[in-house]
Length: 567
Image: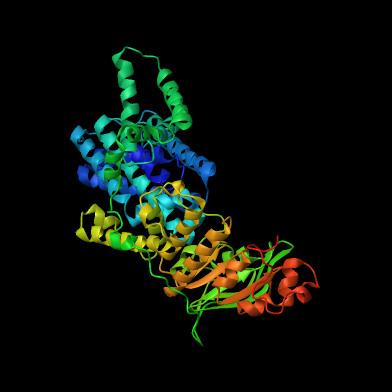
């Protein structure tokens, strides 16, 4: 159970070492309630878990602002505070501890509680909550943009971790009949981490494997008459080092190697493969462009972004109308990606106003901007490599996905139906980009071009009003770029407004209904592609030659005849 409490935070990318402290709080609370008030044991369990969960929640409010080793250090400090407090209070028995605690727990109570913990995480993984936590662990920035409220998710698993550690502490106190501060110190905290790491984080079975294996070792040691006290920590250290170096997926990874692939696929695949209808090539759809007087999806007015003395955006005014494919081009360093980051709230603007569907963006987090209907890709792909292709797309649809975790815990049929409907939504997006036949492939097995297309499918699954594509053709050859242009027009043909940021000027001119040109953070041109292509200031910005405009053919429909803009 303590291994499960550690597993809860690790699957969200957090390294907390406060689980022993939470178990200590619950153990002392429950023991005192039983010894002095004689409360029924079911009530004692609930109170003990609630107190531990409350302690985790209150601790999480400040410390979850930290990441990595800093979070670990903060939680170690909390654990020491709890241990020293218990060591110096009379009510806790000081260094002597509490005894005798009434023994009301039998082994079947323990196994039942362990089964409930396993059931919790088994039902969590294929749910909206489980996918969100997996995405959060993989890439926090991408998870935020996909609409995941990372603060709420982190605080939830931190509180859940406290409750599970509290459950273990209560059962331990009423089974062992004796507790003392030394049983919940730093060594126990590291031992709990070892349980989860050795077992493996790739499956809910990891805590069972890790906890069971490391509990068995000292029993074998006693069986063979080896009584050296230093041997157990030494073996634990060697095991941890060996797992980190040679078996990162832990004992679960060994099981995946042993189990035949066809059995593993049957176990891991919780949803059916895409239907034949979804695998068919989608119809050719072309963007008709915005209707006259089409409402604005997004409006930027006088937007500035300063980085110290550098002005990345300088008084940008831009309106994105419903139904159009708006191309945003400019030389390197023009401020294109900065503008996208400001629009999607990854970076706050220094001045000016931004609104999406008449709702101000200022003060909003990326997940709340996503909730307004804005979805995006990244200049450098940010896929969740540990998830399958389909799961990546389902995470992209986090905003429109139904919450199914509680329904899955209670075995309600509507949870299965809701997951199937969301999976079918993801499959339609995969079919649109031509990846329907690769739904169950891990994302890290895709080629570069397929990864780019997967990002687009993931962004589309949110059913956005505005789709922002940040240099989707980067690294593609001219054939792949042409296919991407067709895909963008198909996407726009479904009614999605597209903002395309791209260096490939030819792709932009052939795909977009309107083009905006940035240079040194300022808008220097805005209009139809043919007119923008002949604009002298645009040609000068790319070629760096004041005479370039006179050299351009009068009927030119694109800037210089290169697939990519001059660097």
